[in-house]
Image (cartoon, rainbow, N blue to C red; front, side, top):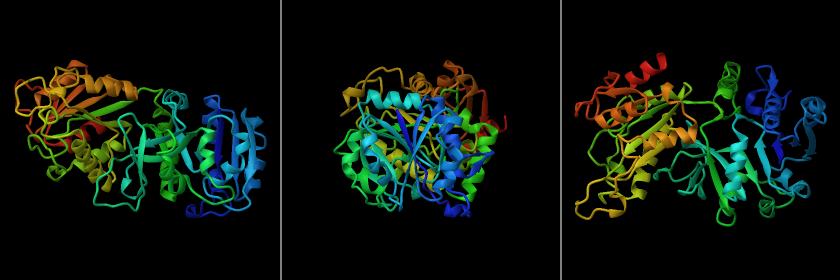
Length: 426
């Protein structure tokens, strides 16, 4: 599969006009060289660099790519054509599916798994998506339960609504069918001018990952990714490696316990929760919510209403630069006999805590090492769930306060922040 890297950026915000943005050094290597080495690791060796600003600087450095064990060709834009124009200009070379990667993004993700997802979905346009810590000023993407993209929301969207924290990560796999929607010689952008107008015309899917993907667009971000690169964090976060996780119950741990919450207006974050999740985000632990939501089975709340509640949770956290990597919920309840219950969900399942089904699904999705992971909860169900699969269990005194049944966590703290401090300093 061919890869196209959009390498025409000037890097004006980085404060240097002498070096094009993709050639900025990160730990002694240019960003572009790091990207090319990742592609080569996955046997993606046919690479096109679309350049513009200081194109000769890039071409003189890489040549035909033979020194790096790849084949590099170039298309030089005489004038900037956005993220789409250069690709349209080489469409005769694009007879099969191909990668597109923005030249200001450092990443280390399992590209084999991404290709597998693209093929299994029979996708014509696959976007890599991830939660980030600033969704309030990011373009967001909405997907359905099959990961099909069903809407796009620009950063200047209606802020009275709540949206899931899923951000376009600037790594794509396209089929040639997308090229018909790009106008030749016209400057345009995939995120603003193409995607929002074709998601109902092409089979577009979102590939969600918690692997490392960040842009270097500001001096602060460049400094941060350089630190992460030198520490090996970027490589360790590739999903081929086992990851550590902190599993969080929701009600009584993240938000104020109100029995069954059925409306987003009733969702209220507990004090110190934002600080706690931000603290975990700064480590290499994933933050994964696992929550029983029997209100669906009791027909007190719909799946759609629950999604809005979770959207609000992500929105409130994101406004303060905190994020959740994944949310799993169990909609079931085993007992029959509630008035107007939803019989579809009145079953004995393997996902309702203390059963470990939600956590085992997360292990599969993210390659999580249970022995290095924690669960934090406020009730017997949370703690027993963790014990059944070998997690270190932590109780908090918020919510039900671990006062129910025979609740004996390995550790107990006053609140989520104290628990997070314990984990991060262990």
